[in-house]
Image (cartoon, rainbow, N blue to C red; front, side, top):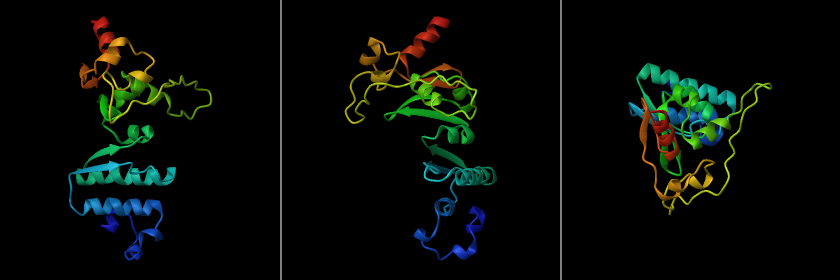
Length: 192
């Protein structure tokens, strides 16, 4: 298993504190693979690693996915990682699913205001590119004792009275593109 995840045999008797973050992450991957899974949940798999090590771990995971037929569920806040590794993306806000779409569609045309704000925060490595940033204001709702209505309404730039009264249902507004937003539903109805 050490060979599969790219760890030298000389490290077989090492303690975790003797290894750097990338090697510890490889050990975590090896531990998961020992059980011969088909589905692996990766919770922030590269968040504490520097960019070059992140790329190595992500490439390892993608190679293992291809070679072993694995399915991953990536849980992360890093949207550049999400874009690189995902086929389908679910965006959550305070424990609720607000948008689900194929990755290419989500980055091309986000429909939920929270998704739009998240994507506007991704740095673009081009000094001439003028990114229009969506700034969120207001305080977070309580995830433990949420008020009625949409959990994002207090921070949404487009919130209407109905957003504070009724929680929007997750609906398929375009083929395989699901959104939980009263505003997105209204825009869709206006187009029809």
